[in-house]
Length: 367
Image 1 (tube, rainbow, N blue to C red):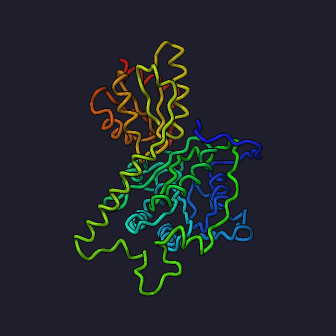
Image 2 (image 1 turned 180 degrees about the horizontal axis):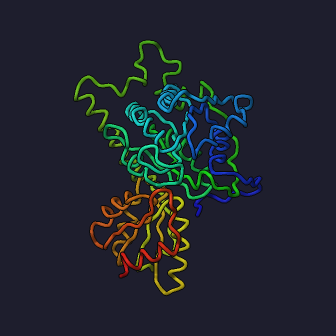
Image 3 (image 1 turned 60 degrees about the vertical axis):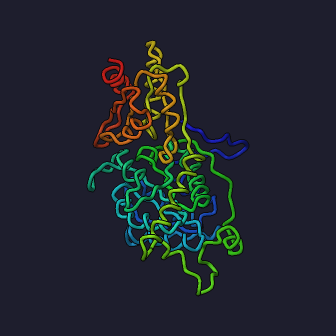
């Protein structure tokens, strides 16, 4: 599963998804990574430490004392127009939610990587997709949303790290790469992106006029712009954000379709489960069952129009997730009740097999 552009005449490497994120961050001109180790994403920081980018590109790599500290370091760097990022796994991202909300309120671009593990609580180090609500629905306080990219391959782990930075700076908003533990730990071939130079201070002043870097002392710094003493001022901030989210929803929806044109039934899945479901679709077709697969690449903005379209031509939809049923709510909303929408998932780090998916389709949708 990969919607990435073809890479010609470039070196092919074999690495983990976590490692691909680290290499891509260095190559796309990231200024600073601030993180804290937690399984199953610790290789991101470990790889950055091995690469020692402070000796090559000048990128800062720092292990903070906690996830709370790391997201606030991202906040400080982002307010200066720097490309800053962090990474963690589910309970660690929970600790970052206040900082993420502050970043959204201050309209600051950054990238957060979440390689999901099971919960609630400390849970398990096994893979999960149970952070959909935490990420796509905002997670922290306030009416904010966060661009969320869901890779389904190691190549996309690299490509979407670059894309996340591009979108974050385009719309002045935090962006998340949301992967499950399998994609973070699995090894595949990947072509790494070309090196981009880090922005100079002059380029930051030109491209990020909102940044605090070089601003006169009389100018109000961005690090306090999420604070409003008057209700009218807070409403103005929120209305500006909501207008920007509508722009994102119009321009940045991404999804992949597999055998959907003549489908009588539709499976909706992201990340690792999309890979499993593709095999289930192929098996269903062998048995004469016309099934298609829609893979949301952007979980926010969600492919509402695409799912609405298929609700007019299919007889039912099944979401397959490694959780108790989260994305299914958005699929139900997008389908407007036109067709039955059911959920199938496994919990505790268990990954459903293609046969289980096919059985669920037969029992829950086709009947």
